[in-house]
Length: 192
Image 1 (cartoon, rainbow, N blue to C red):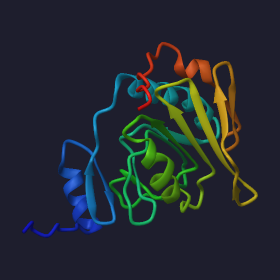
Image 2: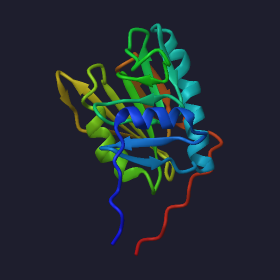
Image 3: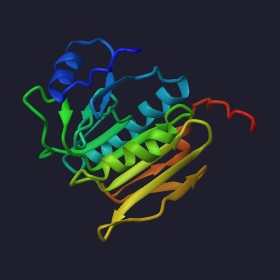
Image 4: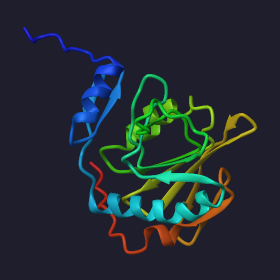
């Protein structure tokens, strides 16, 4: 007989997480180790932070990479990129866990795509200031854009090579080709 799995409280998770060297996400009492990122994933993430920085800062807001923890409801995630305004609340005076964000970006890979499209998107939609979600594919030149308009999440707009992504949450633009410049994409596995 296998021993019962011990679920952690949010406080136990945070205490342990802040003492660890490696990051873990927290979902419904369970703790999940964050896997290492591929080269394409890491380059896309840094390119996105660099491209978003002047746009977001021009509006008096901030942008951070995956070291900033986000707490939608009773979960803790590390989005690849998160943009938030100066009045965004933090969990406590450690200032390492955001409670709200305006724009969230996840870089898709084979191992993360299902969770980024499903569980995380649903959790992020509970954030009061969340207005825009970008899914950046690490296997093909493609950015999916989800926008909250009139209180309703619109169907995604797919942006490919040579396209521009008009950011509605920060009134800026991202050039798709610039985001992918110099990035060797992850291979797409052959169909079964």
